[in-house]
Length: 430
Ligand SMILES: O=C(O)C1=C[C@@H](OP(=O)(O)O)[C@@H](O)[C@H](O)C1
Ligand SMILES: C=C(OP(=O)(O)O)C(=O)O
Image (cartoon, rainbow, N blue to C red; front, side, top):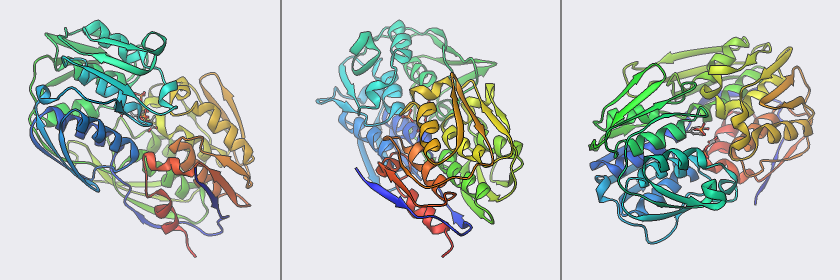
């Protein structure tokens, strides 16, 4: 495991960054390419560990995938072209890989075994195994299917209407991927709208999906056709630099080609609500996934409340939003975010414990946290706890610390952003 010393920073951050491709869209592009007929070409794929796990799993299912950095070619033979795997499908640290793959495997007439790292082994799986079992798949796992390793035996599926008990794009997507293979229609009802990359991609691959209010419907038996996919930059990665630019005095950062899908832009709403100096130049609004350039400049910030429908639109950004709130004037309240407890770590606990080590005044609540602002931060030894977003948040926090910060398990950032430290240091003025 690597430990990194983050030197105290006395300068503003200036410059331009092109963050890597979106993680959620990269996973889906490989998955859809693998189940479609024909050759899919993907540009600006994220070569982070999580998305490489997805490629590795589909290769084990017999799909030819050529990856050259951020360029990927997937030679799909339709969903029936997938072959029984000879070894365990290892998903590493990636919840999106395991949960979406279960939706695909549920309709295929063979057995697969899925497993990941120790973080994946703690994450709940009944949320997907339960609806997929109702559709006709046989899924078994530790603690009655709640935890990995999981064994999926797929087969003939029937469409269902399913009310999601939690707002989760992974669960919605798993059910839709099974629904494409089922007999009849499948309808997923969402308590709050979550990221819609799966729905957009079904259309890009020539399929049909309808949304009416809270309901998303797919018809079974749809065959998909290969597509060319150009992936925008990941707003969840850009978020670290948006916060850095907003809180480090004198900074001005331009982020190029950032995904602006409205189901993901909650971080922009929060920055605007706090009074940040942020400007957005959108590109083509009719693109399958909208994108644009974002400029952030340092400014004075005010506290805000983050809750309700906003939560799924910024769920992965909450660790860095907590840091942002330590610099705002007043008390920021984050609620309705109990899902943070079942991410790579319990992100309520890891955010509160690690930021406290640096001197933040922050409290955990049952479904979020309370952050008291205008806090001076000091140096200490902190840990990413194997969680990429915690590692990157702490690296941004270090920019504000009066002494060096020692970050343990800094290698975790490679899960979603392998070039993170290079991009960060490119902004520091010597
Ligand atoms: O569908 C996706 O790509 C994701 C959905 C979210 O998880 P949940 O569906 O568990 O909320 C998010 O936290 C994760 O990083 C990626
Ligand atoms: C929660 C995350 O990813 P996943 O669920 O795919 O592991 C994340 O990237 O913050």
